[in-house]
Length: 241
Image (cartoon, rainbow, N blue to C red; front, side, top):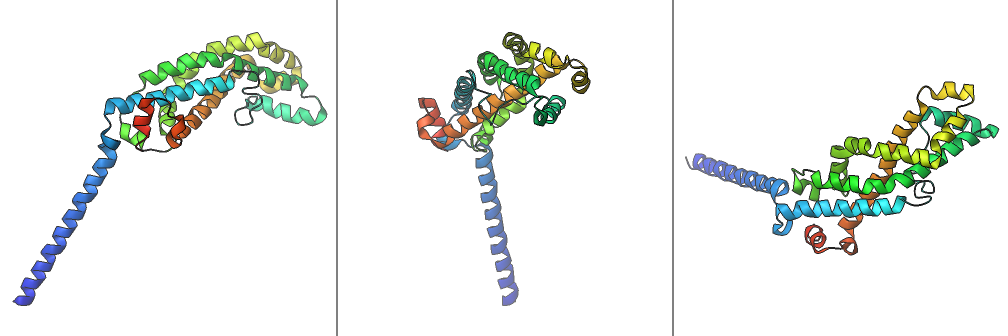
């Protein structure tokens, strides 16, 4: 009888310990999912994330919107679209890639010239960004906010940025350089139909890639370096992470 009672007592103790652990785990998960650091309000958290992205976008635009902002930066230099790039590589050893090299240079110049237009487009996208899981973004990876912005706004940003990119391609001579390059029938057969539209779409996409690259780096810096938290809101939001 005593052994049976002891067994029941041990079983009850074990069950109570398991229940306590489960409650602790549930509470911890709730904290990770819902609780913001240091009693931060959701309003401040969202505003801080938007401010960080706005600061990152501004820094990215300043970095690339100048001579050689794209062209001299190996991380974001814009190549030619696939078919043109293949032709460029094939012709280079023969010393015949000059026309396509010129197209690539002027495409990068167009991206540098169009970049200032991206600032307002980015800011508009950032202000309209909905952040359902604020805590998840705050406590996420070092580029969680940039990744969220990109996932939700990349397509409309590309549509909005393409017209100024096309204009810049005209102003910098990229379209004329392309027309000159494909005046060679053999090269025209390689690049296919509507090469200028292909070049504009491709250039727009890669120009935005470069901007997002530096927005992400700025977010990483704000998270890691107190000096980059240049406002009281950024200090409040990111200082407790």
